[in-house]
Length: 163
Image (cartoon, rainbow, N blue to C red; front, side):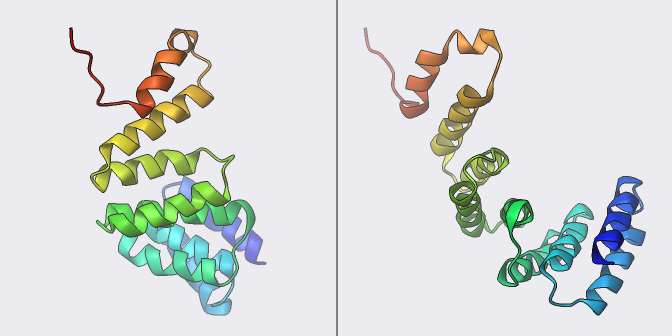
């Protein structure tokens, strides 16, 4: 029942019927107030509606209730992104670093971590992280032709050469 209701809510969301999706999820939450997946989806619904402050506690509760696997990774990223969007930069960095540490093979955490670093005034770390991610994931030969210097620059962003 939970999975079917969540699938229906996601379908409504894809059809841009955000309020109907939210209503369905809130009804599900009333029936299953401690289910981590339901909590996560309710948070996601608030998030999609642009109500990140309301999403944050649901994401946090979902984690505390034992959300796991890919859903946990996505929840870490969504929670970190929501914290960033409302100006909680320290919390954003902490959550996104956790996502990257616990799920190192999922690159989405790195992208949002770079955004959080940037918002936290850590521009060098943001650019370095994005360069590293680019070098690890690109198939663009025009970029790969410059892999060695880009790899160097990611760790030496401020270096300049004097004549």
